[in-house]
Length: 236
Image (cartoon, rainbow, N blue to C red; front, side, top):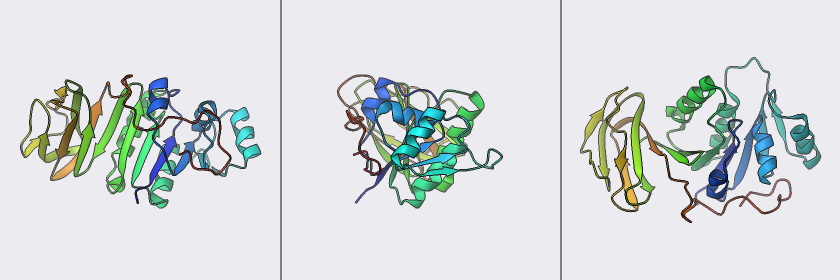
């Protein structure tokens, strides 16, 4: 049985598009000021991690009152709060991780977060990030992506070249080709129908759908609950 873990990070405030697209999840983890975002969205995390230098005093008080476990780390640490949360998701045996509020904020944090979610360490987990109206999917081997006819999909190699890239269901197909690091060749491809598959022999790709979360009644899940659940209860 698959297990989805939702991570609410401390980046930009999740847009209504993101909140509507949140899937049912077996576990919710807040990373630092993601605690504020979760509270505002009516989500009660099962765990909050970080140095909590950005979480508001109100959010921390709220978490303590609800009995949400707070795993506090020193500010001088070797991992970002998001990376700590991802490690917890892997330890919880997640098959899929969905991240909200991991973009925006400081530009260096954004670049670091993109590098982290595409790390080879998380190759056994399907990682998706929801940012504004976009969905970012990490591809280590092959994935099937849902979309709309004429919707834009960009394929970006990270951490080096992507070899043996093959696609189906896109206007500009790739057949066992190499996308070297730094290329823009994979930008602005287009869905032919409602589904596309992307596979590769070696390397890592980011599949970016900049308009995936636009209102069309096709959210990834059931959205946030209308009222906060009891502490410790999965967000699904």
